Amino acid sequence: MKPRRIAVPLDLLALAFATQMFAAPPSPAAEPGSAYLGRPIYSDPSNGLQLPPTCNVEPTWRSRISGTEMEIWVLSCDSTARVWLLTRQIVEMLNAHEARLRFQVVDERVLPGETAGESLSVQCAGGNDASGIVVYGARWRSSGHELHLAGARGALRADVTRRRLNDAELNGVDCVRFPDREAMMRKLQQPERPNR
Image (cartoon, rainbow, N blue to C red; front, side, top):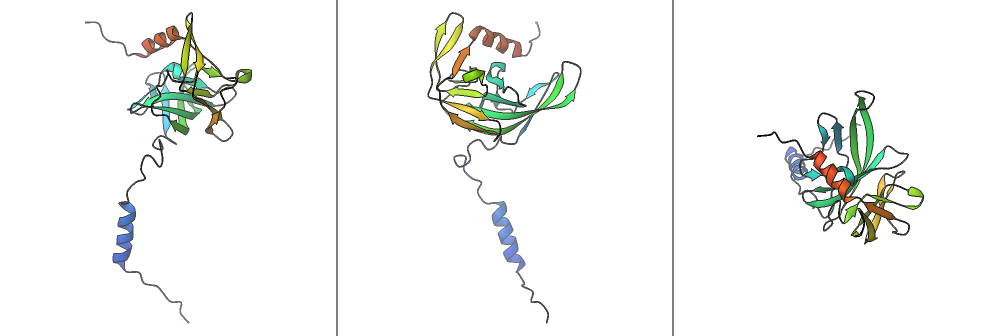
């Protein structure tokens, strides 16, 4: 006895294929910020940090997570504040002090209404100088040449094992910003303009 073959009309297959190809993509609200997850970002001494074209990050908006090959960044992409948790990998050692690096976004939080570097900051530490903490909705009080955290709506903490950002308590979180240092780093990051 021969097995029966099921014939599927080619028109039906073509229709199913076209439906899949042209189906509406999920709305941004359903998957906020998913465009950057898994995305590699390269950095080298000659070209600097090669971010997506609509993204901006300043040196003081980045923080290495102690004892790991991970970093946490606050940045602005398309005028929307974001927090990225990234892995860091050395691609090539150029000399004793310089290397080409590859970062990969492993988790992201989109925080509309926040301002990267102002109300959203990585310049924080938890108990026992724990790193990988970001505060949002931050308010600052001046103390000499420093700004200390006066209050915040909430915090995020990097879970290195699970490679994700989790909501965290503000208890024990201490944040200090140094506006003079921020301005100096911002100025150093500006491309040099030729003299006229």
